[in-house]
Image (cartoon, rainbow, N blue to C red; front, top):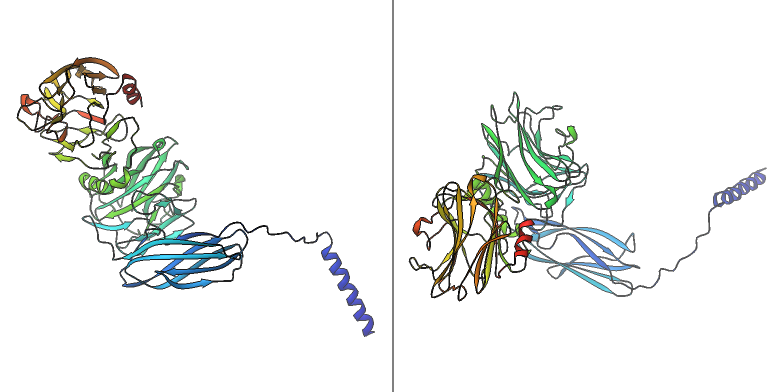
Length: 575
């Protein structure tokens, strides 16, 4: 009986094995192919140029990397400053290794991470990454209490606390300053404790490259977790469409709320824009590229009751309604302040960052100078700042961009002329004339000899409250040439495109791409002793005859080291 039982179990086992394999193809070996490529190494952290800032003299670093080979990885060795710290020779996936190694003895100074990967055929790849551990960040600005540059981590460099990550936000692979910037992702954002950030006056500033999909989202939000309650904290968010996104702010005042409809970012420009907002005891203000967009009165100061968390990159847990969910835009250089910043303080932050932001390639043949006046006086071709005399400002309106230059009494800009002009030259800009005073310098280059006009040039205006004539005077070395240009109708109150060209034989003035007048001369311009361009006034070399400061608006100023053709002027104007 026992024998029969064993036979029966054996038969069942055979039948079961046959049935389990029924319908399954045999495994056919496949040749892996020729080993043609060396391994590929990707270092995820640290990145090239990473700066690790912590208070500890010795700290740890989590090295993260990936190695891929076309056939099979043989070995990986990791070195820090030419000393091997770890090696690998066995891998779960023989073609792809994703590894992390915690190194716990990192000291201050510059370091070189070296990773070497070798495949089974002996082909080797080496990857080097330069990074450093530096002393903790020192605040740059008055009342600065939070600074998150997003350079490969989500660390506030002042408190040395890291944000809590929700979902899978990432990094943009581009930045205004440093190595990287925050890149939002669907259902993702950062959370940071508000314990040390709540003050009666409050400001925040950051660089922003907007992604208009979705058409609305939260950007920076602090709430108190009461459903759909806006009487505490604040909500900075955006709404709009694929061409324009409006930055708005809602502030809770305890028993009510205050709305600020801010200003619009041009989505189609695809540019980094500086966004700042301030909250005082009586109002909130939104700035774009350092220019005030809108202020909104508040019946009382901000109320922080129950507010515990700052959400970065989404409406988060307190403001996800009305579609204000995750923001897929880029953000860089986020700073928070325990005061309501002034416009000048915000512009100082922009100026400090502008060397990296305003990387500009000339658009037109012969272009040597471009000053768009979008909340800064930075000259884009060189990336440098002019000298500011007095207190010129920004117009709050423009032909292109955010703002334009606004002249003021006893105020102008000066800029060195090295590399700007040649034997022939041109200038072009948009101009909205203010006929008070009745005459002024506009663009002037002279050589500081009193009342001498035999060198350089002087573009200026003269007239009345109804019309202003634009003129140019050119110094030819032994003499001067006058061009009486054309007349602007002051009463129209319109932007006019002005261009002037100076060749070896004549000067020409254009309004809105149309020639107004040419004046001939026997020889070209003489630059002897000329060092400085004055913008918005007669300045030190042409303030006589009352050609003092110009209170008009100017936008999109460009200079060229050639005499532009009428067609080139029309192209510049139309664009």
